[in-house]
Structure formats: C-alpha cells, structure tokens
Amino acid sequence: MICEFCGYEDESDDRDDLYGCPNCNGEGLDLTDMDVARIEDHIAFEGNVELKKWIDTSAHGFKITLSLENRQRLDSFDGVMAMRKSRGGQRYQAIVTPYWVNIDHGRQPDETQAFVQEWQFCGRGWSESGGAHIAVHLGDSDAIQWWRMKKAADQVEAGERGSEYLIMLLELDDDETIVNQTKRQVAIAPPPDKGGPRSKHVARMIQDPEFGLWLTRYSLYASHEEPYKYDLTANRDALVKRVCGMVSKVELDNGNETAWQKWDSQFKTPFIKWSQRR
Image (tube, rainbow, N blue to C red; front, side, top):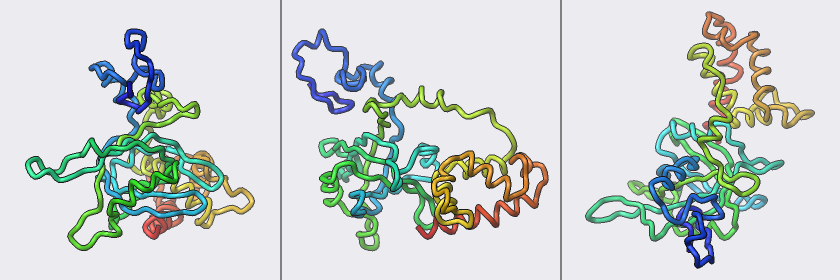
C-alpha cells in the first residue's frame, strides 16, 4: 500500500494489523473523516502559486521563486528560518499539483501530474510591482526537471501567465517526522497583545528574518566582528530601541514622534528600498 498522505510505500499484506501509515504516524492510507482532520493539523501552507523564476545557485543547487496570491499569505512563514551560507533553512515536504485548463470546468489542478519534493526555505518578500513571493531551495538536483518543463513568469510573453500550481507544505522536523502545526502554534503562542498599531508594526518587522538579514549585511549597523548578531530577534529589538531612543516600543503609540521618525528614517525606509531592489 502507498500512503495517500506522505507517499510512503508499506509492503505489509495484513491491513488488520496496520494502523494508518508507520511513516507519518497514522495520518495516511485510509482517509477517513478523522484522518482528514489530522492531516489538516499538519499543513503548514496550502494555496495557489505561480512559478516566478528558477536559477542555478551553483554552490547550493537550484532555487525557485514562487508568487503567492496576496501579501497575507506571507503570514504562514512568520518566524520560519531561512537558508543562509552558514546554515540550512526550514525543510518542507512539498506536494505540488500543476493546474491545467479544462474546457468544460475551467482551470483545475491536475492530480495525475502531482509530484512530491523536499524544499528548504530561502526567504520571502513583497514589493508593489512584484507582489508577495517565497524562494525555496530544491533538496534534490534532479527535482529541477519538473520545473524546467514549465514556463516561469520571467519567460512568458505579453498577455501570458507563468505556470500555476496548487502546493501543500508539510514542515519536517529534525527526526524526519511531520510537525503538527496546531501543537506548534500552541507551543510558540505569542504573549498577549501590547501597545497599538505603531508598536505592533515595528514588532512584526523586527521579527522578520529578512529584516535581520538586511541589518546584518547591508545596513549601517552591519558588524564584521559579529556577522550573525542580528539573526537573533532580541538583538534586533535592542538595536531599534537604542537608535530610536526608547525604552519600550509602546512609546511609539504614546506620542514619542521623535522615536517614530528615527524608526522610519533609520530602519523602515532603507529596509523597504533594499527589499524592492532584490
């Protein structure tokens, strides 16, 4: 039997002694209503994407960039560790289903062409012109063959669209098990909301790994002595408070306009300009 959830092939002939799939802890094989509910608990991201581009990064193999439906979909990757030269990124099992145009029913995912790959998260971004996108590294060098057969957004002519897909991402833990997202969210639940819109906006940007990358390598505060200093959210938070001259970000909602202006000129505006050039 082949697990309908994770693709694991089990050679057992005795289904009475087999509870679900030994590879994904009983989430696959027979998809009863209870099984479906458990599968949904494990989905880190599910949605439509468009192939934006693919490149050979030589040292790390192939990387693909995918456009998301809207900016809100980036929330699924809040706090996710991105791939760097010194470390790997968060690993996902990606279940990818290409779309095709059905004359009678319109655009539909073609399940007969679905394939499974392992991805490492490289980063996310957004711009006014390009919209929301994520980049992932393909774990297997042969995996690029699936994408080479499709047109990317940077290869199409006027009026055409890049190849579209429905993707489901399952987060892989260090022991190769699939992470239960419901339990994970409970484990990393944020503290109760504090402050107003300004302080929350600053907090979200500080928590963004891309903001940390910009601080570490490209900002005025990049440090050659401590090249990974701003990988840590706490260090980014401390720097912003020091430069803006505030003890707490809540001050931004309580009339500290000087701190807000420094945040805009020293951090927000330079970071946005850097993101748009990428």
